[in-house]
Image (tube, rainbow, N blue to C red):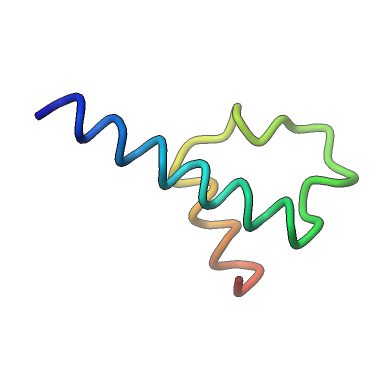
Length: 50
């Protein structure tokens, strides 16, 4: 069960990172998107209305 939950979280993180990268959010950023939490990625995704 934990493995499935971890895989789901990682897939969701990858989804948010890819969408934010496609939108150019991380082009001029010093932050590595992989250092952000899932909550932070979700917040950015909603903030940029993607």
